[in-house]
Image (tube, rainbow, N blue to C red):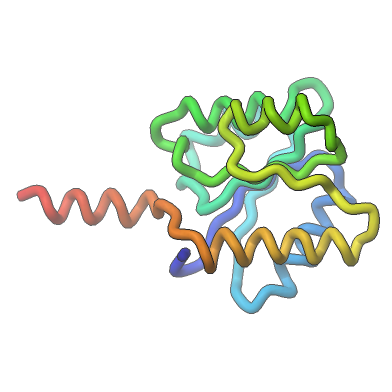
Amino acid sequence: MSEGIPSIWVLEDNDEDYQILEMAFTRMDRPIRMTRFRRVRELIDQAEKLRPPTLFYCDLRLPGESGMQAISFLTANPRLQDIPKLVFSTSSNPVEIRNAYRAGANAFHVKRLSTAAMIQLHQSALKYWLDEVSIVDECKSIVSTEQSNP
């Protein structure tokens, strides 16, 4: 379970898909801080400068690089590897799904055709990851470790 204001990094190049995500989040009963990246390179360049997020939302199909590269980058980075990585893609290709999990994705969701169904999907995923699952809060882990070591 997440306490405080959750921070979500979103890798999404499509403005319409991002607006649907914003609609879903604003309808939740809690504030959510979102940071959007349109390209994998932008995410990689900013990742070390920003505080680690609570969750990472990722579209796979992006111009140039694939969202799969972002998942691999986060998974390989010791500071960011524990962040739950959620894929939202138009693809239902079993090979892409398998590759996403092998790269370090924690969930793979196929995007729905209707806006209402997408909002529902985003809200369900967010509720699950923030309210039902225990996830690592990087800042709390650091504080707890520092306090327990004299």
